[in-house]
Image (cartoon, rainbow, N blue to C red; front, side):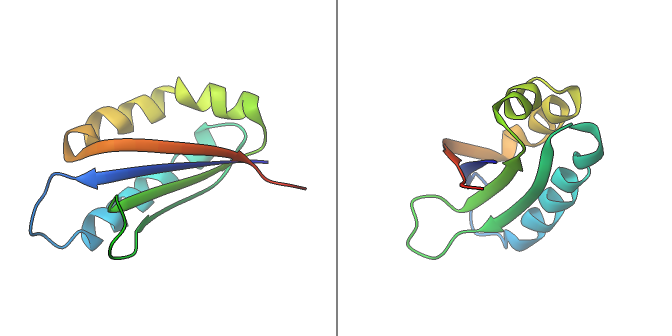
Length: 98
């Protein structure tokens, strides 16, 4: 299994980001039926003092599933719709032991 951790900052200053996290969680969960090999999604706020505010955590069956996800039309649509809210992206991909 592969875990993809995507860290973001939000350009909405001084606002409660919990509503954004809630909406993003719903949107990412809606991808599950349309992205073969996408096993789990979770969006959360990071802890205070972190370098980034939001974490998108995605679990994939294997590298092929992750590669296909990157070009999935539903994922690209979500990225286009929410991209204007997010900045300072960094990510980590790790293999999880069975």
